Image (cartoon, rainbow, N blue to C red; front, side):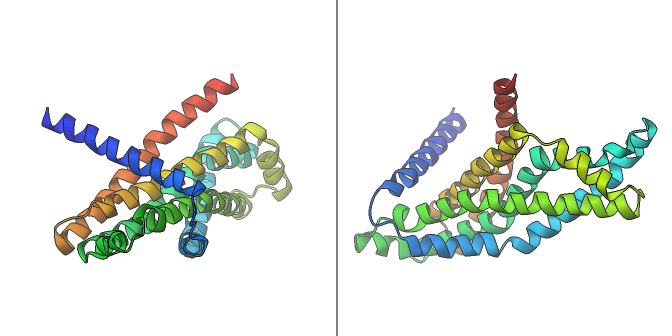
Length: 252
């Protein structure tokens, strides 16, 4: 029973922190400079790893799918397979997981260090709300930059799939791009942009939550960082399932 009670308490605290972070958007002061700094850290700082992830994921998709498609005489559909797989599923999920590993852990360790060195208590003593100063800018930056990074990953994934199709599968470039682009419609693009918004919110808030609840000195900071990455990764995968289910139900 204690485990269940503890889990309910954790969900309650996370929900309260998330609600407070969202409502802070409509209150002054808004700390725009802090938000822009976090956008730079999350967006520009994660660009290289997202480019590499997207590019090689698209290449692997084209490479691995070619054997199955050859069996059905459908190698010309490689572009469609890469496009739909990346934009609907792999692009948003892999981008979120990369950000969870790089940014979520950084947020948790940064806020955790501020907690154990009593900087958070000092902010409260000076009349500054930590959720408004620290949590809301990071949540907003993560929520806005994740979709943009996902678009970059999708584009580079298509390029990676095209290069593999061109030089390994000997597929015509115009055929690849025609099938890749024609397979996309409004619903697919919308699904590929809705998911990263939710994933970005999850990653940002989970990092902030575990960072602010850090205790036990430097060891606690390491524990909070690990918990943040693991929890955010699991929640992203779980959220992906339910979002896919909801979107499919709305489409049909």
